[in-house]
Length: 411
Image (cartoon, rainbow, N blue to C red; front, side):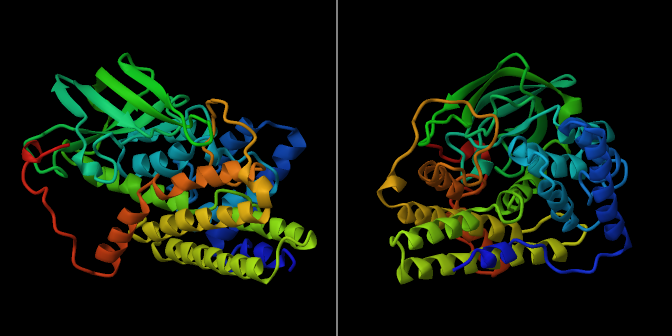
């Protein structure tokens, strides 16, 4: 087997771009040439990208975009990645994939001004959603926000906060009316992670890294100008974040040809040459390659179908494919390495400054990290419920949590 199947799977779909899309592609290549000729750094290039409308191509002009189709986001990004530009996505995955579309859709003009420092890399963002008693059932969260004049006083605990230790700002959802039903009593805020009362503690993972954190909020003051959306409309805003999170996690975020399935192809070739792989391993590889190709095409179709609107439940398809597929591919990679696939390079505690999403050189460590894929960004079980109820129209599961949130039993 050659690597050509995986390489062809990672090529952009053959489309005929419209005038605006074609101009954006030409401008991206031109921007790269000028940048390389001038010898500028990565930050300078990202500033130029934002000002040229090549940061978020689907946003309106003046906000880092050109009003193009959402599918152009990946097309433009791949141009810069293939040229060797640093992949900032994993360094600021929450900011680029979730904060930016949420702020753009629901934010005030002043809040939209945050898009520029977010994209150019001056500010890393995190997401203050999950809690010890509200993970899969996010709307059951207990972190409170109490109005105090022109500010809000926030108290509570958040958990599984990716890159919270390096974040400058965070997307925060808190309960402002415990007498309402659980989805209706929530409000969405932008939190300053450097505010007094914000404490970030590391959560050590199977890999030894502490990429995730728990965050304690004690009498944290948030000005009302940092509220996104109306009071009590936090769930509506949060759904924008969650849907974009699943699309973001479900996408590649890596240069074409550099994903986990391509790594599996390489390891299979090495194992076959050494006599450690045969028909069984080849069958596993091809089944996984087909799954990866189906996921890629599904993502492209979903991006094209939603036009200028925000992502819908189809984002759950992308996230579910990514989570379960990643675990299966990394499991195969470990098997192809034989006994050496059971060894990791170390378990020392470290505080990474990038999200560990893609396959690295340490295959065993990448396998351990992939186990979190089916939990973060919505568990695979919750995503299957979303698909069953919202896309297939199947009956919803029985609910025992109706009525005011304050009267719902909590563990």
